Image 1 (cartoon, rainbow, N blue to C red):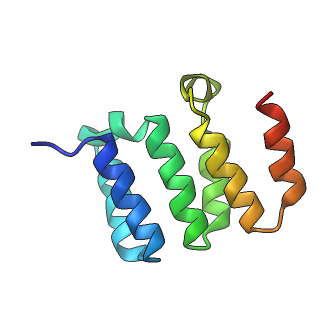
Image 2 (cartoon, rainbow, N blue to C red; image 1 turned 90 degrees about the vertical axis):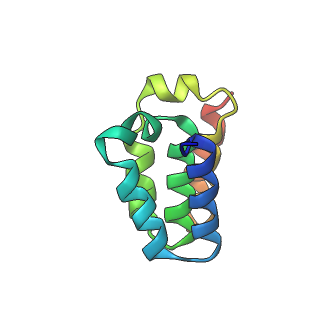
Image 3 (spheres, rainbow, N blue to C red; image 1 turned 180 degrees about the vertical axis):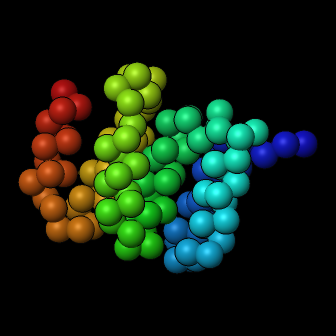
Length: 107
């Protein structure tokens, strides 16, 4: 049985909750391997990356991931998980105006 999007999403979430930078960064490195790049391009993984970075106080990395997300991927993200992750990151960082701006874009 191979790891799938859900497995990586849950693992990154757990690492964020535990503030485990080392384990989270190992998972991220694995997602960057050629055989896993297709998983890394999934909206759920992108939102998990943003949340992991936000939880571990790597706000600039979280913002960079959100900034690098393509319009096509945002369109595929039917439940808005990428926007919600970015909004959460901005809110936790005290950037309420940016968070509300993203909220307005979701109309």
